Image (cartoon, rainbow, N blue to C red; front, side, top):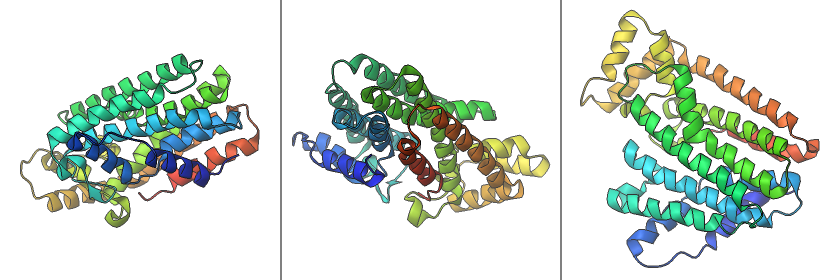
Length: 324
């Protein structure tokens, strides 16, 4: 079995060896830039780890894993434009470093490039792998639209929000694991269970990201704290607060998200104060624990030796303990 570090090194080395054209420079330089900004490489590592759980050979999963990582970074470029984000991984976002038009076009090119990498998979696996890839690619778009729709809604139910992050975030972790398992020769039942493991971890991961946006350390988190609040995004914290707030707290919370041109610092401080009074952080942490446990339950059903599950369990623990 490969270790997490070994799989991560394989991904980094393979990304560095990708040969992108030099011209037009403003099309390809942003792609090289975002792929070089680091990141945890969680998704491609999951693809290789899932393959390795069912096969001693992971070579056939490397290009599909790279396709997953390239596609993920494409979504980040477009997300940052829509979110008006100026920092990612402690560096300027692509649309800030260049401009929005460059970022949109480079993102489009990345999505196509991801499919070019994906098509290098063994032809016998291509139909199933492509089906999984297309499913999460479309799901991410649906989830992003739901996320944007939430910004203009006065109330979002917790179930709606969970469905949105399931599509926007966790479906990619689910798909990354399924692709690796398919290439590794897993049974249909094992592909389903390892995917369910990834979907629940993905939900917990995004909920943790919501927490970090408000309660994280900017020097570790890599993005400005309170960015979701400033952007009027309905995160699990907002959803939870709006469902529990009453009287003056509810009026004040609604006013923070309606007042135009409000000072960002005061807005973040004011909303966070309400979160604290309502114990929102503690409630969300309990929800995260619930999805974490669901994930572990599905992993237990995967028909592989316990030692082969250890790397997936280790990855899970790293995700849940993360600060960035």
